[in-house]
Amino acid sequence: MFGKSKGAVFIITLILIGFCIYPIYLYVNGNINLYIHPRYNWFSLLMSMIGLSLLAAGLIYSHGRSKLRFRYFDVLLVVLLVLAFVVPAQPLSQQAIGKKSLVLPSYEQNGLDGGDSDCPEQTEPYTIDVWVYVLGYYDFDCFTESDVNIIGFVIDSVENPLPDNMYYLGRTVISCCVIDARPYALPVLIENGVKYDKDTWLRVQGKMQRKKVNGIEQVVIRPLSVVETEDSSKPYEFYKSRKPETINGLERTTD
Amino acid sequence: MALKKLVNVFKSDFIFYGVVLAFFLCAFVFFWEKRFTLNLILLNETKRNEIIERISVPFGDFLTLLLGIVVEALPFIVLGVAVSVIIQRFVSVKLMSRHLPKNSTLRGFVVSLFGIFMPVCECGNVPVARSLVMKGFSARESITFLLAAPSVNLVTIIVTLEAFNFNRSVAVARVGLTLLIANITAYVVVKFIHSNRIFTKDFKAVCDTNKSDKHDTKSSLSLFRSEMWLIFRMLVIGAAIAAASQVFIPREIITEIGSNLFLSVLAMLILAFVISICSSVDSFFALAYVGTFSLGSILTFLVAGPMVDIKMLALMKTTYTARVLVVITGCVAVMAVIAGVVFSYVW
Image (tube, rainbow over all chains, first blue to last red; front, side, top):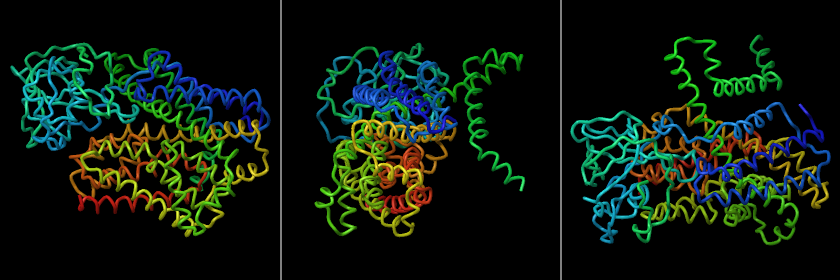
């Protein structure tokens, strides 16, 4: 297209600079965590700035004839760059999340059944943190009859179908970037025969119970109150890889 | 004859990329001006909304996933390219060679351990492997480094130990198998592929130019830009394929076969190939499959993923010929599956 020319080098450098600016733009607009886990924020910003500086320096000091070629295919990179800045950043749709395998906290997976007596002390109803964060680090029996106050969306699973008296409440969790987003889910018992449509956001208050579901011991929620709610303002939860020192120190907001 | 003519037409840059570009532009217009565009075609509002939903939602997901991979991988690529430029400018091959074993197998093994000091994911290691070749390291050494580095670096080891704290031998097996497979694969490549057919013509030209270039600041900045461009455009291709496969291939096809021991190993291998997740965090991803899949199949995922996922193959295409990529993929897949089946019985 531009072949090997100064023009090609100039355009290529501008495209790369554009992509280095993009993470900074996302961060400034508060949207970077729609794409990556917060633990990468600073690394991403730092390396973007380094890349930006080196490319800009190259543009100023080393803008000579180069072997770089700008081919027709590369127009797609320009299109992608324009789309990145023009189309508002958005989370994955529930349609996409629904296609993925559910992560279910089962006693078999927990591996701590009956072994760890070091249970956290509960002072308030557990929120989403217990579900995606703490549940994997303590004996599940620690949570039996604990109060919960959780927001999530109704999700179904072909791989792990539930009996008629239960439905899954799910939240999307990211461990690295949006490509590995997965739905974490807990079975909720249906009280009074009220069923909810798929993708409906609900606030469920109730108690956790140990129950056999499809022959596997699982943590389930026995609801005392279920209210339909708006979409959560936080589309993702983020996986935390360290055992918390104390649950009381965790975020205990109503999500 | 007619088919051959058609293939030739599509081989032409202009038409092929023009068609692809037109598709993207149409999708863009459709996405943004969907009501306007569809009003011209359809009058039934219910049907219109249904079609809008069917097209715009997957396209939005595709764009989100594609940009997610780009944003996640970009800092690692900047770091990897910067390290490769530093190697070009400051590292003396003569000095390194003096401390490396003379025996080629031992030497390859030692080079495969270089990755311990490179705390970046697979994307960042491609430019480093290229710079090793430019500095005079052999094809075999560059391949052992490239395949081993993502899994033997300290960050990956610590994260794997942490994720599988209920069975630490997973981390040990991951590192051991990665080193073994990387070294055997590199040996197979140089044994069965002629040395002239290992690297791409473009990369050979870069190596020749690099030998004659002065290594001053200006040329280093120029090298940084060239390497960034080469790696970045391949990252976008790989990311686009990975994103498209997540949006358009039903996950059930892969996970439904998890109950069978051999098939579950194959399923995790395919998942590793498609998902293209960074090696430093793939342990947490794999953790979600404990219970559904055997530990052996999860080991296959952890070992094969950083070596031959879609994104990585696209990046490797900047340096190695298609023949080499086929051999590498075949060797890694076969050995990772065997290891997965064996470990499924052991654990």
